[in-house]
Length: 288
Image (cartoon, rainbow, N blue to C red):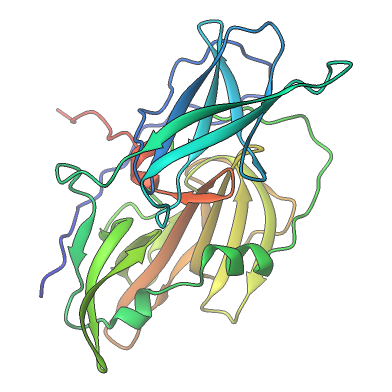
């Protein structure tokens, strides 16, 4: 079996985070209403900013062209169908609740970042990470005194040279099972030993879980609703509470085995749901 590989180009990236209140948003993500994607749901033209919930989780709400817009992360394991958002205006003397429905569609065959084949020299188990809830339980949230961070929707690759196994579903096999599709809710980068890992966006380091020198997990809060979890990072100089800029070195890739190949995993979370980072990465313009 062969792995579909992608050569990286260094990306040019505008400043990711802005601390000043903004009502107009220039670089919204494209809507992708399918598992692992992002739903953009218009809320209305009310002068007041609504609070929006998807299940129990609060949702990012922004104002675009005077209209409120909910930006909903759709986890990979969500079942296509109709879903509802709960909308509230908490400042009302007698708060009223309303609901708004939206549709999650099946994965489209033209969205090519979806089914990939594992290389023969790796086993499926090497790419299977803990489930989302386990990741949440693993990290205690640290609260820092700071201004609200307004998100931008641009990120960059964590490794700038090498190849990667994209977010999506992988066709894998193990010693005791037949070929099967498995969810791969992250980007796994493969690079040569000692490759530098970079922050995919600006933010603050909320936590670091050190599982030995070769498997540190770093949690970066990019905004109140965007977080990155970076796994298999080695020799990180970061400390909890550090501010990082997009493209700042955060450590090196960890060796997978004696083959000389190293690895870094990148989970991108929107409203607590792991989404496809490739939806928020724009390629750099072609160099002359």
